[in-house]
Amino acid sequence: MPTAHVNGIAVNYRIDGPQQGPWITFGNSLCCDLSMWEPQAAHFSRRYRVLRYDTRGHGRSEASSGPYTFDLLVRDVIGLWDALGIARSHWVGLSMGGMTGFGLAIGYPQRVLSLVCCDCRAQAPAAYAAFMAERIRITREQGMGALVEPTLARWFLPQTIAAQPPWLEALRAGIAATSADGHIGCCEAIRALDYEPGLAGITSACLLIGGEADVGAPPEVMRAIAQRVPGARHQVIANAGHICNLERADAFNAAVEAFLPAVA
Image (cartoon, rainbow, N blue to C red; front, side, top):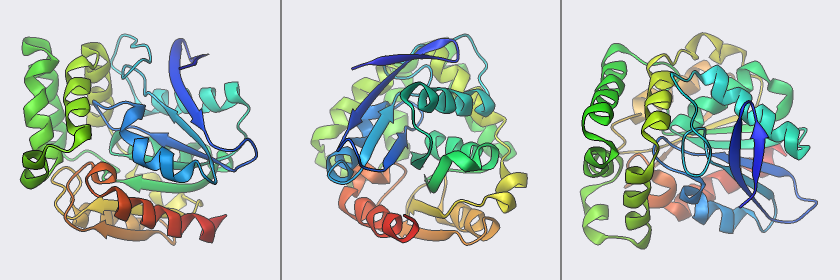
C-alpha cells in the first residue's frame, strides 16, 4: 500500500472506489489499523471514493515519540488530504477515529462534508483518563501482548468472541503488533481529550453511532454528545459492543448509508 509523507511521518493509506465518486475517509480505533474497515470499504466503494489510513503509530504508519495530541492527529489527516488533493471529504471514525472527527469538524469545518462519529467520547472524565493511564503502564511494563485479550473482552460481546468470526484473529494479531510508542502516544492524546466545549459550534451534519453494549462509550454518553451538536442524530446498534462496525457490519453500513444521501 502507498504512503504519504505527512506532518513529519510516513502515513500508510489505501484508496478504493470510482475515480469520480465523493470522498469518504475512515479513521481507525486505538490498536487497530485500516483493515478494521474492510466491510465498509467493500460496501461504500461501489459509490464513494474510499480513503482509509493508519493513524500515527498504528498499522504501517510511522510512530513518532510521544505524547501525541488530537491537534497532531487532526493535522495528520489534513496533511494527508492535502497530499492527495482532497478538498472535502465525508468522515467516518470509530473510538479514537471518532474523536479525531470532532477535531476536524471543529477546527476545519470547510473540509468536512459530513461527520459520522462512532463509539467515542468528546472528553475524558477522570475514570476514563485513569483507564488510559493504566493501559500506558501495562504497555511500558509488559508490552502490547498483555493487552490483547483484555482489549478484545472490552470491545466485543462474549458470544461474539466465542463464535470466533474470521476477522477476530486478525484483530488479535493487530493489537499485539501495534507499536508501543504509537499506542502510548495515542493513549496520552485520549487522556487529554476535551472537545466538549466545541461541540455546539459544529456545523457539519453529524451522525453518532454506538453499540448498545459498549462500555467505553456507552449509549448515554453518545446521546449526550448528540444533544450538544446542533442537528445531530444518534443511533444505537443492537447486540454490539465497542467495534460495532465489525460486530454488526450490516446494521452499521445501513445506518451510514441512510445518513449520507441526506447530507450529500
